[in-house]
Figure 1 (cartoon, helix red, strand yellow):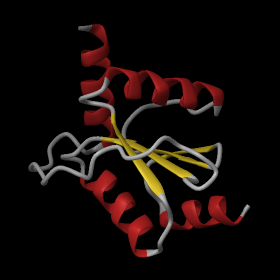
Figure 2 (figure 1 turned 60 degrees about the horizontal axis):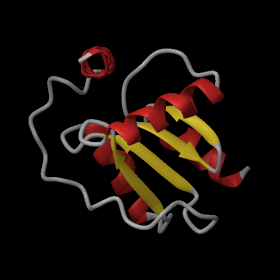
Figure 3 (figure 1 turned 180 degrees about the vertical axis):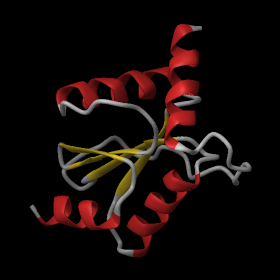
Length: 116
């Protein structure tokens, strides 16, 4: 219950909570590897998550979507990545770009992280 409350509060704080539902994103896909440089932690209904996944797909960047709302392990993994990356605050999406953790989707930051 506490995890669900924390998720709801963090999603609301980031601005995704009031969005109308979107069609589901593709399933999680294969495990993360060197060929999958980006992991996107988010929710099916979040427009920012959708924008991140669409942006990566258009550019041919392999990405794995992890639904933090439906999968408690994905939520825990996101929290761990944020702690390791010294990221404070909450909200989705959270992107792990080759080990660099980014809060929110900002195309310029993702491009920089992919180049580094």
